Image 1 (cartoon, helix red, strand yellow):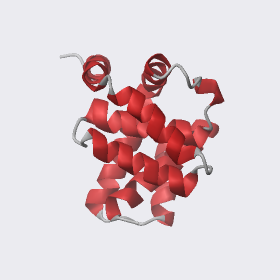
Image 2 (cartoon, helix red, strand yellow; image 1 turned 180 degrees about the vertical axis):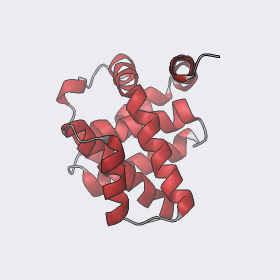
Image 3 (cartoon, rainbow, N blue to C red; image 1 turned 135 degrees about the vertical axis):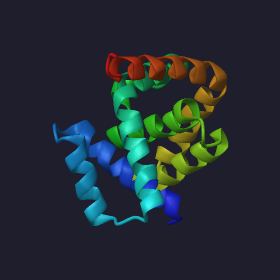
Image 4 (cartoon, rainbow, N blue to C red; image 1 turned 60 degrees about the horizontal axis):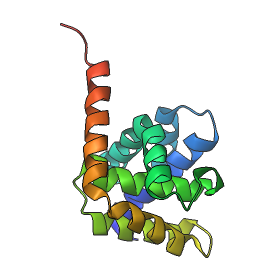
Length: 155
């Protein structure tokens, strides 16, 4: 597994656990790092994914439901849902990973962690979302700005 793919795998495992339990994100992240040690830059990349996706989870889910309505979110396996959130966050919120790379990495994670049909499913959903890349980026950019405003201390 490529180094950044390993970082994404760690992030996926953490997001999956957080999604299905009430475990504190910081503790889950720390526990995953103990199991899958990463170089500092990859550790930071995984941290960015986890703590980038978590505050936007609801918004990411709404966008997946809106732009890929053929796949009801409540019927998507938890692992697939988290792969979709991560990929969408990478290409539409973080905007540092090219869309094709984010989709390819998501498909690779689906091959490793999902069911036999997961890679095709992930590719299909992300393909539908990719058609609206600029709209999604604008929506998530505005949402991220709102979150930052809420967390900034008042002067």
